[in-house]
Amino acid sequence: MSPSNKVAIIGSGAAGLMAALAAARAGADVTIYEHNNSVGKKILASGNGRCNIINTTVSSKDYAGVDPSFTAYALQQLTFQAFETLMHSIGLLLECKSDGRCYPLSNEAKAVLIAFKNAVTDAGVKILTEKKVTALTKEKKGFIVHCEDEKSVYDKVLIATGSQAAPQLGATDDGYRFAHSFGHKIISQYPSLVQLHLNSKIHHKMAGVKTFAEVTLVIDNKPLTKVKGDILFASYGISGLAILDISQNASYALMKKQRVTLEINLLPHFDTQTLGVTLEKLFDDVPNRPIETVLSTLLPTKTIVYLCEEIAVNPLKAVSSLSEKEIQKLIHLIQNWKFEVNGTHGFKHAEVSGGGVATEQINDKTMESKLISGLYFAGEVLDIVGRRGGYNFNFAWASGMIAGKEMGK
Ligand SMILES: Cc1cc2nc3c(=O)[nH]c(=O)nc-3n(C[C@H](O)[C@H](O)[C@H](O)COP(=O)(O)OP(=O)(O)OC[C@H]3O[C@@H](n4cnc5c(N)ncnc54)[C@H](O)[C@@H]3O)c2cc1C
Image (cartoon, rainbow, N blue to C red; front, side, top):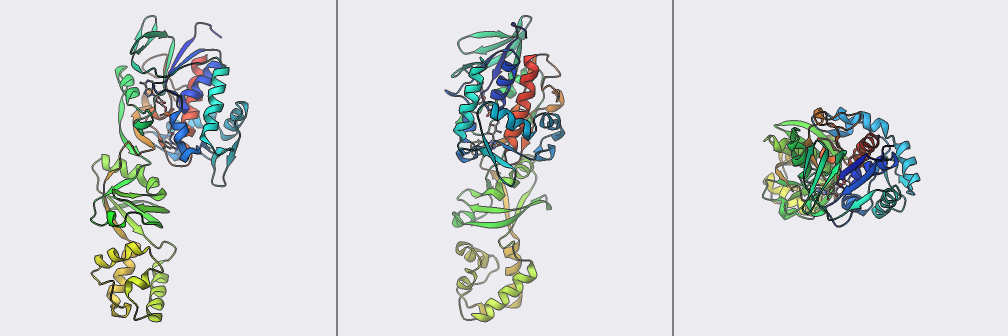
């Protein structure tokens, strides 16, 4: 342990707190700078207040970025078992679901924050809240952390400022700015795990309709991925877990000015043939009832009038009036309802952001800059974005731990 090893950590999110703990436990003199009035605001807001803290099964395949394999070493260092042991050491018990998602046993994100705050305080970390870092420079004597009212000198600095997602929780693009000032390449950012905007005249009329569907994401007329889950029409477009799950690919394609379309299968439990047989039987059973009434046994009522509009049939007419061709068109539409995506709901509503500090200039074994010795990066500020399921915290913890251990040496 070197008494002169002064470490500054900019940002008190998952990556910053984990790094602070690891560095302080390794003997460094650690100071955290946080511009919010309290630490870990995203941790508190995460997982609808429950904090999906990690996933028991993780690999580089759960991430996107220019080079997702950058995550591999860090993820191997912080296995789920190692993470759980570490959490027990700071007084936090976890509960994991059968799909691998883990939460604090209390089901309250607050428990995660309390455990980390106590652990870093016990390890001797100084936490400076309401301290916005305005610039970072390097001189002969070390790194200078500039705040509005003071400057301090450190041997090593970790940039753990996160991404621009959810600025209402304190997110800034400062980390990119600091990195860029040291010559680091920054990959363009885009919102991810975010609701999508639709170019249609009907989505807002179906606002509030929530249903289980299969969504195919089509980029420049080529199907890219299919996801089953809830969708929710909204005044601005579409939301729901299935939409969040495809949003990274959709948002990235939009940034690249590609054409983005959703094909929605409203009845994914039926194959086309079974749906045909089911409808035929239903229509035979109640031939004189209006189309609208008969279809309401299968589909959300608010969608029916617009499905009928699209195939140009009157929903008030009896089902017996439908021709075979119209029935085929209806079946096709129910299983392939197309909507053009023309934007996302933006960084304010996004859980995370894609893009960030290019990983090619960072050592994946230490999280140290390959350009500037003593400068480290961890968490979402890097060009790594995870899918839904605890993977974003997973990488923030793992990269923060590696950076912290290294800085503590
Ligand atoms: C609503 C919501 C729910 C989420 N739920 C989950 C979930 O359940 N599971 C999951 O895995 N992920 C979830 N995420 C994503 C997850 O929160 C992030 O990926 C993770 O917090 C990233 O950690 P980080 O430490 O890199 O950055 P952050 O947590 O964003 O921390 C960065 C910190 O830096 C501070 N900062 C920024 N600029 C400065 C500056 N100039 N000076 C001083 N301080 C500064 C910020 O205030 C912030 O506290 C969710 C995100 C949101 C918004």
